[in-house]
Image (cartoon, rainbow, N blue to C red; front, side):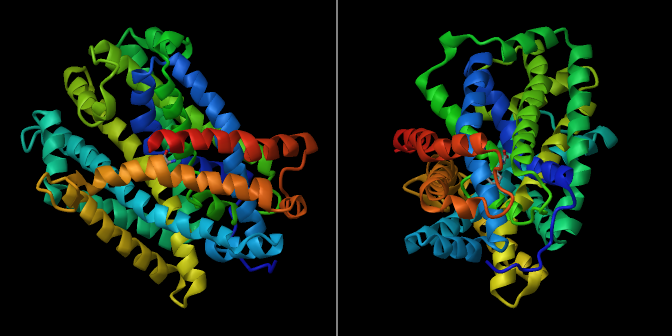
Length: 450
Ligand code: PHE
């Protein structure tokens, strides 16, 4: 396989922060806490950890290995590996399916990322100009934001432009540079929010035991599937984002250690986010089955009633914005890099073109939320349909194909040709998970989603 001159991550730690930052996003801070709360806390967390280790981690490692062996953009890289493996040509579809999924995922992700920015700047301006434009009722203001596309459009565009700017900056001067600032900031913000919750409420102990002590009565089959599905989303696997990140791995990085660290960081952020949110929920009588509205509707109401709540709100939405902005570039990078290498556009123009196309799709997503039947299919808003399609179909199907391709079709000699999984026991375990465990788990999600 040809060795292209390619940008590289600076070090093993830089890679862990960048890939961990890509993994830890809205999924960890917006989704994980409400799903864990809904499903009884500890028992769900335990099942989730098993899913992450048995299914998520092996597929994540498969993506990193594919990227490292390919050493070029996802589309050409997978084509090369298919050829070198003498595998059926249809496997190249993995790259193309990933691109299609990324277009959809990033368009909805940026809409929610825009809301995070809107709340952050809204809370900030409330603090600076307390009497102007104050958000009297957060629930109502969320409804206004979502149902009025013009209100969301600016914030959505700001989020998208920031993502484009980061990716256009390049691998080390754009994505890595931003993640190395935002990730430590994200961890600091989490720590501040946790200390704050511990000091201002007396609920930290209750929150800890809710999160850590399993109550299996509350665990349903649906919760297990939810944990399995979320394991893919939170680790960003199934769409090729991590293949692209793997293709920039410097030779000295130990893949096994780095993958474990990425998974550890992602899980840590999800658990810390829950510890930041649960005490506030418990202290303010927020029900554990609040659902997706927890972060944008219920928490802001709680913040309004708490001492220092305004500051808390600002810090929380800054946290959410940082988390989203370290993940969104990983969705744009594979498309931008493919355009960069397959056309004469260059990185900057390729990124702007890819981002522009996704921006248009996102505008349709926004319009579909207006409640007026625009951009809806059979009465269902595009936004809802896309969310369903992504988590129930595209991500699991992509992950299934990657697990089967690496597990069965790529010869072991090729997987070991670059620094792959070196320990022979780990290698066997990894291949077994890819061949049997992951496909079985993923088929369950796919069947249940139908
Ligand atoms: N893992 C990200 C999150 O938890 C979402 C994501 C999915 C990012 C797929 C890239 C690709 O928010």
